[in-house]
Each structure stands twice: as C-alpha cells, then as structure tokens.
Length: 246
Image (cartoon, rainbow, N blue to C red; front, side, top):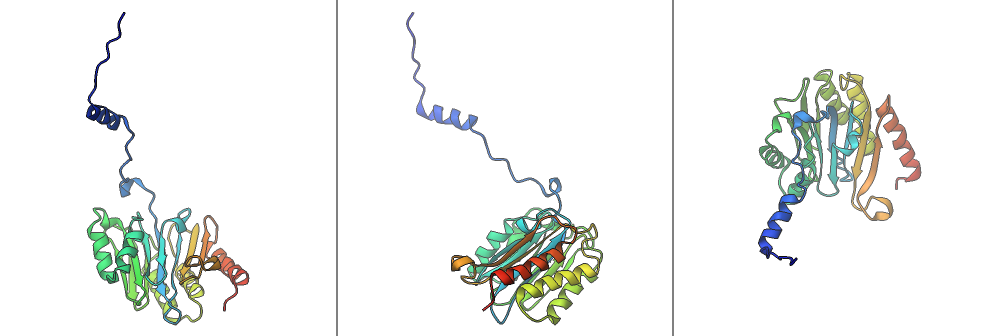
C-alpha cells in the first residue's frame, strides 16, 4: 500500500500552531481580586533626597504590591484593588520629567477601573499627588503637600490620614523613622478598620543598596504579624545595627 503525502502550505502550519498554542490570560477584573485596603505614605527627605514609602494593611504581603520607588526619580504607592502597572509606568513618566499630577492623570486616565484605585506619588523635586477613586471603600481619602502624600481606604475614619499628615509635618530625623512614625500615628486613630496584618518600608537612595550596586537603602517587609508596625520598627532598628549610618 502506497502512502500518499499531502503538501500543506507553510502558512497553514503556522496558523494551526498558533491556534493550538496556549494564550496568556487577560488581567483579572478588580472585582475578582482581594482588595489591597490599606494606608500609606510616600515622601521625600529634603535634606538627603532619599525617597520612601511606608504602608500597613489587613492584607498578606502588602510590601509585594504597594511600594515602588527609584532614586532620583520618585516614589509611588498603588493600592485599593491595586493596579501594579502604576509603579513602573509612573516611574518611567516621572523620569521623563512629568509632574506627579500629570503622571496620576495619565495612569488613571488609561485605566478602565480607576474608580476603584488609590495611589500616591512624590517625585525627586518634592512635588506630590494623591488620588482616591470614587468607588474606593469608605473611609477613603488622602492628603498631599510638599515632599509627601498620604492616603488610605477602608479606614476607621478621616482622622487616620490626617494623623499621618500631622506626624510627617512634625517629625524629625531619618526618613525611615519618620515614615514608620506616620504609620504608628495612623494606627493610633484606628488604621485599617478590618485590623492589622502586614507592613512594609522602602527607602531608596543613589547607590544606597548593598555594596552600592543598587538604590535599595532600606527594604523591610512584615508579611503576617499581629502588630506589624511595631515589628517593622523593630526590624528598622536592626537595620541600623547591620548597616551603620554615616
């Protein structure tokens, strides 16, 4: 019995392969994700130029979602059904010289679910912006000023963000300490009304990382703890012992 070979055009083979190839799943809608309900502060130290973010939430591993920063460029917090593209895209726009207000408009304007998002931005010049979408869960709101932006959602009340702002304005010392103090002030007013679970502190400075290879001067995360802000403060004190200040 003779075998009959059928010639199949190369283009047809490619089309067949594409049909069979697995496709990447589209991004999940905000309503399908656990809400990153939290309070955060993004800030710049006018004396050193350091940029940083501190955040606390009743959410596991908040430090892997909310904070984004680059030395000499800016710091961004993205939360409340967080769109994590706000971090890298926002830093890219800040690096080009766009103001935080313009960057925030660009990020939220391109996001179909911006009404569910919350974000804070500060740049290397100390300019800032805070955004709270209309569909964020109450209480949700923020404040901004020179060198800082504070914001939160599902909070015990407006006094949580005003306490963060007041703490920032009145505190002195290293940026990391001031950021953690702001979280503690917010928690003293009730914080996230669901409770506490994780916290994170990120501070960047030029060549501030280990051996000067990157800009991660402080990168501390508390993933799951009954009192994450207190634990964050303890770990920050350990950081000072392992990496003495100049």
